[in-house]
Image (cartoon, rainbow, N blue to C red; front, side, top):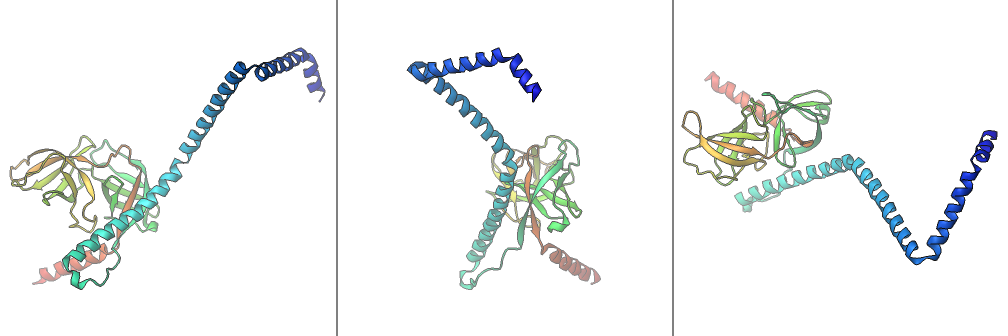
Length: 282
């Protein structure tokens, strides 16, 4: 306390100066319209700038929670869209036998990419969800833009995904406008482009035509975007076309994804294995 009193006594002339200065400024701004207007305009601008900065920081800090909420909503929307497509397709097949539909076998589990490589020949992604979240190998992974890849390995809490930009990746696909089937592959190089191979020579593909999943596997439902055609050419053997495709997913910035959990996949594989075994016995 004595130190505080000594400090005030030592610098009392400065305290008196600032007190008088504040009193004079108050009189100036109070009884002069022009100076008062300038003061309040400047003060409002300054305070408004501080509020804007604080709001910007607060909004940025809250982006992660907002993104997680949006991704959960996207999961529900993806399930609903897929269910609607499936029901409409079945309804068109035979409207006389419409007696309601079972729920789709596809579900979506949200996850975040916590590690990724994009400049290797065998690129891999790591997700923060694993077997305890219902994720198994050979499940498809998508983002809001399109196909990301396929689950390769899982642990209790993490999953390794083989993305489209992996030289061992092969995803069944089709040209949206021509319904022509092929395989999406990747050649070591740019992570922006892939190649659709096996397209018949008679198919007249066009630039900007959408390449999407064809639904022939149990990994991806049909109609999920993979990319757009940027150029056409022939395969090395000249027996089919090889289309260069701009991938829908930007692997340098993708973060939030959804894993497509098809729980009927194992049952189908088991049945097909039994069928192959029986055929080989004959």
